[in-house]
Image (tube, rainbow, N blue to C red; front, side, top):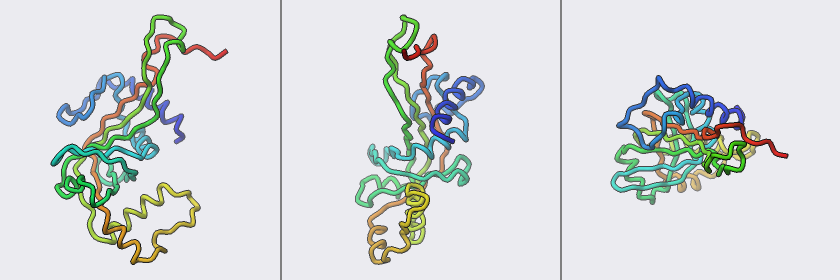
Length: 209
């Protein structure tokens, strides 16, 4: 699915949600009902596309780390996200404690000027799309499991025909890198997605002259 189609789908999905509910105890972000998106495939597509995320934990203190991740759509009820951070990062404590985490996937965003609309009685707004995914952290242990995790990350972000192969690097080198990393996966308990893409427009946007 290309990016334009996916974002258009978020707009469409956001309007047909009156019968859907979410657990108020699990919410990490306020989302007006008209902006709420809960289409599973659409959200998975979004998470795959915008996979440089904010990893947010609050135990033992609030920590935010920015990392690339990989989504496994078929692991767990709602999918599983995998990633890693430096072992020196204090957020490692949250991974080892199997703490609850929120992962924020940011899509495109932009200021929307009132001058773009044909109706004069409008105010500025901000268009954006974002997904908050939540789950418990689970540490990935063992050198083989870490190598597999790193290989998945590399495969996702390298070009399809890239000659790069982690397995071809000297083990003495990669073992040192692996020892300096803390990896985990997050089985997603729930997600909250918001799409505010042109919802404030009372009339069609002006055509460019």
